[in-house]
Length: 352
Image 1 (tube, rainbow, N blue to C red):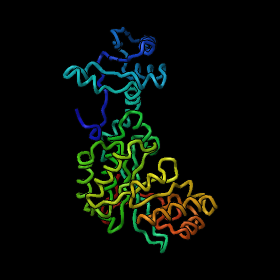
Image 2: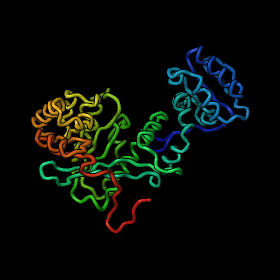
Image 3: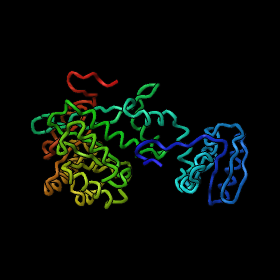
């Protein structure tokens, strides 16, 4: 079976679904929802065998998603009988949760985009400036997707991928798209590339294609800054350290994003000792207020003691930029300095 970062895992669409749950009330709810959707179901121990009876699997899975509670959807697992024919043990062990299976059938457009990859995704690049003189010194790559109906908002894109357990695929695509898109125009500037640490299981394996994309784009390892981004609090700091050490061993820089947004703590900053720390936009946009100045000043002092560069995000006014500069902040990005825009090498045709 393929690595989850290579392609989106999807369910086959045979005539029978197998839904397994250790909970009797969940199995009863599954039977009721299946019958209400026009299919047939019978229990065999902890497994409910669903005979679709000509009903689309998507419709039955949607009915289950509507009828069961969130915890029930996360506990139950579903397997299409077609997936179990060649290696039933492996198929059963790797079966998605009912929540994931329902999300996958609800997002056919996203699955198609992930399979299309290079034709469906591109990057926009937002400039990063040095506050001391206003010079552009880097760019953050931001993933963009376009489906048949037009652009897909990034928050919707990542939320849908998370529900379907496709984040590993999307995160790999994001890294490689950012690097490919910088070919020919980046010069000596830094390139900030986002990554979600929980999608990288073993960096020496999972990051091979990222490193190949970096080499293919003609980028020096030392000009690429891999930026940790994730919506949740870090649960395994040791694993994150291992991933960051892997990047550093190859000469890349690492950045810690959204300091102050509830994701990171000052303890995490001290332990990870990133090359760059980015201060959350909500704090930055409170400048030149006293509380924001105090928080940013504390980060600047700690960062200076470790040789870490401080970058403020979301700068929209000259007053915010001036306050950050007076506090000793090194770098800034935000609409004041430029919006994210597509870039391409001189003489090359823009991406579709």
